[in-house]
Image (tube, rainbow, N blue to C red):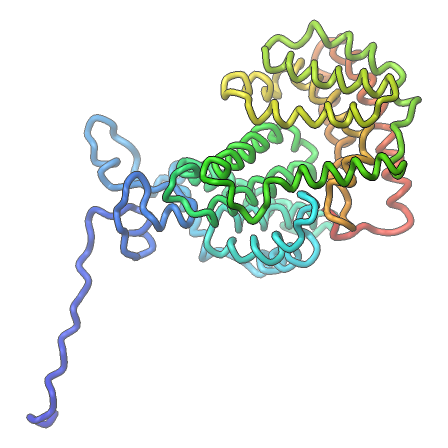
Length: 403
């Protein structure tokens, strides 16, 4: 029994439940400050913010938040990291970070690896990319892990994009978004059918970069990085340290493009084709630097494409879109020495993966008309030549850890 003169113990003041906070904060048992359209917690974590009122509105009945098809958190991402995930994260910060953009090693290993602990979409993108890169050394569960984390990253990142250009979104979150888009796009190069997702991911990356520019352009990525890289490549070219495309592989190139001119129907596809034809013409006339510079403008076209026209270009079920992409990939292979200079020093460039994409496009196109198969002959010729070269170069030593 306590002494009567001792001070009375204060009664604990229990927290009263807030019925109006968002479902994300409720699930984590944290206080929601209820800002609209997204609370600060959801903005910081890059998640879709959903308020209970959205579910109780009688005119638009919706399923409960626990529905597996509608909740980003049907799998509690913070509680499901395994020993394999920890190993993949370690591999990422030591060897398996992406080769792009150039001079970005410290961003991946020292900045994005920290941001990932506050942004689920970035963490899952990191694990997806590391798992895909590690499949070069087959182990049980790696491919499943790569696709699992990729699926969650894509689901989370589109929710975060809803507030990417909001003034309330921190520069740290935008940097994390840009990093996640880079990772998911880079992962495509390691997947045989990655070409089917590549254009939409590039568009997401460009939308994020646009949001960063809209808010002042302050970013750890340095959006002038590409300009600096281009100047360095130009100096290498002027000094004669970059080899020209093999002339035998350009045999049949212009004829192949002429066959394509009647195939592209949408305005965006026609504009895309004209860029590639102009670049091909420059290569054919031995104006290699002009060809490389022209082909780079494809990225600007993808950045400015409106949604409807982009879908026409990105439609992988459309034979014309597949043929167009195969020709673009073949052109990039011809200019591989240039693109190899865009990557982090000591890393294998992503261009080495492109023959696999062309082969897969050809496999899908084999179900189309005979005319389609004819129009893929030149891209296949280029892909076969570079695939043989890659095989010969990989025989002396393993390139473990390269993305």
